[in-house]
Length: 105
Image (cartoon, rainbow, N blue to C red; front, top):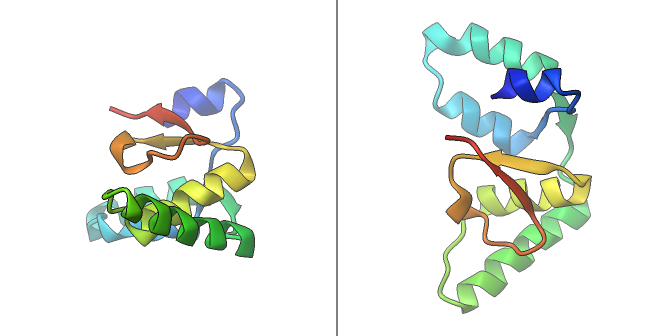
């Protein structure tokens, strides 16, 4: 999927949280491939505004009985801040109305 998105001229990027989550699930044998992937991605800093928004998401969704992780709210807020489409296999983790999602099977 990522190759197809790149060939179509899309910019691909990740923030620190996405990269940390990737490496948390990568075995030593697959680390070189992960290094290649992260080496070609744009890097998006989590801005102070995005961090505040992530906290607001956790607060507001918790009041509705929806528990969201800090990691997911930081990823979402950074994608929104960057005007990016978030590619995820877990769309349920990103219930924010203003986020654009692309489901990755």
